[in-house]
Image 1 (cartoon, rainbow, N blue to C red):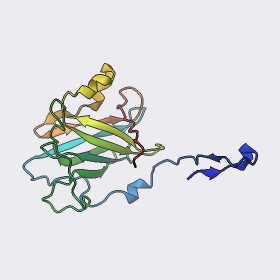
Image 2 (cartoon, rainbow, N blue to C red):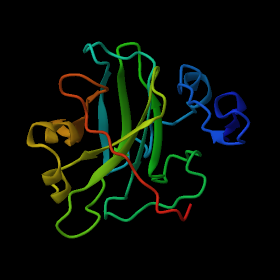
Image 3 (cartoon, rainbow, N blue to C red):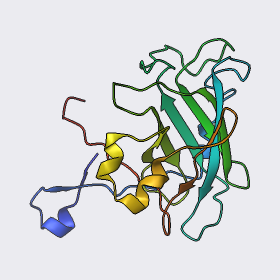
Image 4 (cartoon, rainbow, N blue to C red):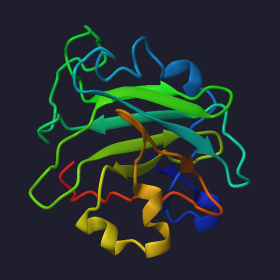
Length: 193
């Protein structure tokens, strides 16, 4: 909520925006939950491993980040599973949250999402919470070429691609800044909430 700042406006009653605060490091205690990285049980027939490392601007692993993933089902349909924080071992929830380990590595068990529409590539939405960030960051991990990627400078497109590194395993490293910085997205609302 904006705060009233009369000293800089000489009693005019104008309101100024309250400064943001960083999102960490308290999130490491409040956000993780049991089964958070398991969007689907590892034994599920469509299960894949989605993993990577979060790096800072100097190329060092970030040891205290948290990531969230949101994805469609294998047919590309959005998952609207109520109670997605509850894990029963059978339901594909579409949502997962994982803390990185001391080496900055994270890992999810999920399903590879299907394409959201003809001619589009499947992707996972990825949210990053980390120390020093004023706001969490959004990106996408694509599982193939997509028309959206043509809007990204060619030398940065690779930062949005999940790379298969084994059978049913995909790697998606995140660089918060510097050389090879991941492309982060700015979602602008339409004013409808």
